[in-house]
Image (cartoon, rainbow, N blue to C red; front, side):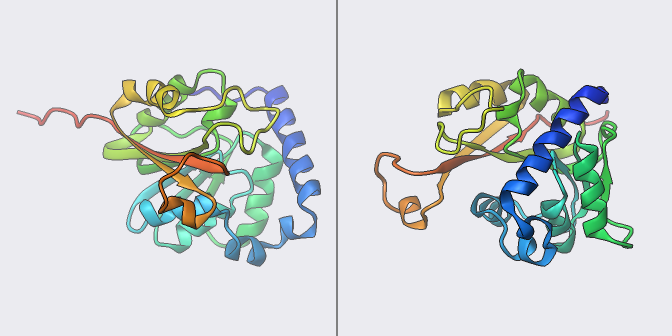
Length: 215
């Protein structure tokens, strides 16, 4: 299972989070604004995979806005990130409420019905191994869902690769049944079949095989 990140890794992601906050300006710390202006790709993921009634993990939750949304929509939510600074801000956003839980400690096995993993796999050296880690956190019947950019339309210097469908399937397929859906930022392009000319993500789902029934 996943090991806790080293202090140096946590410090690097703290730095990246602070750079992101500075780049966004005052609205980055305005929770009400952030909750009502979720990213287009995150709204699309929620429509396809709602959290209501499920134990859910927001893996790579940053400062927890999406995790708070999962909790508000009826999930029993946990947010995990390796950046202590981001998790500290997530707890400030949550305030005195008991949930969602925010942590820098990796979860144990078999805890979740659904794991959300958004714009994470393109940042890690071994994307398939990461999906295998996440599958290990699932309860029987659970699934891993998430998003990752198509190609390099919103490239980040920390990205390790850009995905086409074949490359993404290669990373996901060892861990179960795979479903992929390409979703464009421009709503019209989701209904008009033509060659991509704008920002898009793959919305993916990985459902591992069910364990054999006990005899």
